Image 1 (cartoon, rainbow, N blue to C red):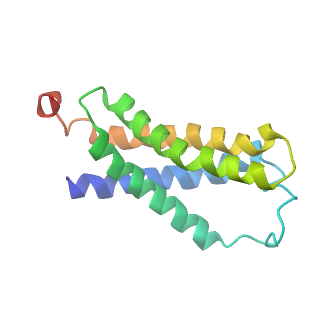
Image 2: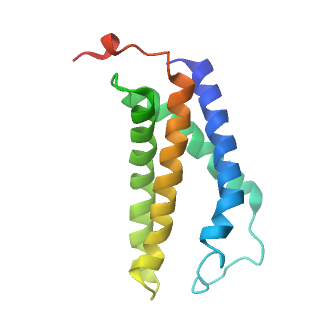
Length: 140
């Protein structure tokens, strides 16, 4: 495990996730969370959003080093981001759909959002690692 690259990749993905969520989330989801949620806070606790993004960036960077199998850095990064996004967002979207009477597409749109932006975050992580691993180290 390369801890220096783990830290750099985490930082790069964290910055990207903050910027893309701050800039684009309101464009794609102008109404914010669905109004059907009970007990919705009047204002979100931003520090927990930031903590969640930091944990996400760290776990993706960690997952990249575990999943890397010698392919192109961008594909390996995309794989790490998409795998993690699917593990998190699809089950959560299905749980929310099971509890909230709304359109299936409304509840699964965030899963698509997460899969796309986390996939790109994975590519950024792959970019940080692009010359670190050699394919010959991972032959089975």
